[in-house]
Image 1: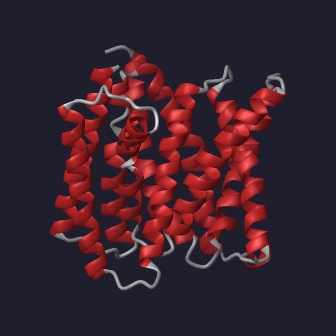
Image 2 (image 1 turned 180 degrees about the vertical axis):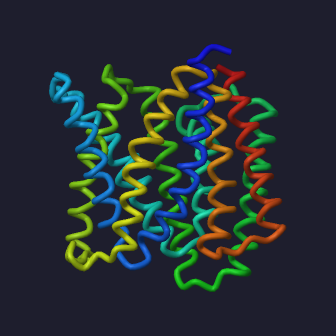
Image 3 (image 1 turned 180 degrees about the horizontal axis):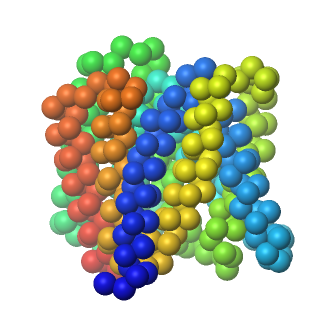
Length: 297
């Protein structure tokens, strides 16, 4: 095994573990601070680091056409997907939020079938869809039965919409690509989204002064920005460049497991046998869908 592949496997492990824990840390961050404000601060700080780094390296500002593409992606991936998912974590367990997010390949298939009339769907795809839906139904039921948090179903709805827009962003990227450094593009998407998120927070009146944000939130944000938005994302891109897509995508199956386990230990979230079984069935379904899509392509 060459050194690049060895480093890529380490990067895959880092991505899986860090992104899994960010769900729990995100939940901690919104306990005493409005979620949209948390998301805005996170995206602004992460975005400015990326953008300034590449501007200093001499990369040009985006063209008008690129900026339009970046704005669409910012709305889909960071305003809706990240912003709404962060809001949802105020009401639901972090492990459930991570599991819902992992369902996006199923939505990609359904959108391709219903909107783009993609008929290249195999029996393996349908099997994966069935298992994914069945597994998440078990987790939903068990969480609803044990969870008495007010607004539980609001959190579910927010997380589902966030996952749906991530699926839409995935399709949009595949159909409307742009020639930009992926790190640089992500930085601009984060930066653009931060202003939109802050505007949304201001309009809704759901903000607090920066001086009133507790240390718990700042500590959580420090981890989310440094580890989640920068360090793990760099590791993810490195993984994608040096490993086969099937292996590089394994992080998507590990993230929810990490979130569920860490959430049960750190956040005292409910962990039952039904939740474990339902989660494994869901992830198996997602795996089958991903495998069938690679076969079709």
